[in-house]
Image (cartoon, rainbow, N blue to C red):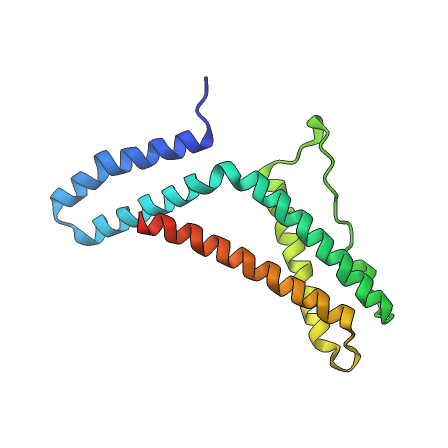
Amino acid sequence: MRPTIAELIAGITRTLNTTALPIVLNSGDTEAFLELMITARLLAFVESRWDKEYERLIRENTAMEGLLKEAADALQQINYPDGVNLVGNIEEYHFDIQAIPSISELHEHNVERKKKLQRFILIHTSLKERQTPELCAVRAKIRDFLKDLNNRDLEAAQLILAG
């Protein structure tokens, strides 16, 4: 049976820690040793996220889809031209086993949605004279969403670096 990606990463990390690091440590090359230590920590971070990556991307993409729909609705209320195109062709996820997207596809959708959120933020900023409670509420939700993403990633990285 083939190893999973997480098992492959764990194997690479184990080899790095048990074989490469001792050799470099014995060589006295401190800079190379520190680089390998950082690499081992980064691999541990990737390993810790791998099993949850698919779920994380689905959850993030779904949350951003809802935020973008709210943003488009708020822009439509002030007759902002092209507000509907903010949402654009966002694919909703349907879990037909034959059509489950890959992690790469989910990542692409994630980046696309983040760009659209950024576009809304720029539009919102440019509408100084036309602010509505709905627009401000969407902007606050987007700010909270992005803050949560940053905090989650920071906490996960700190756990790995402390370990």
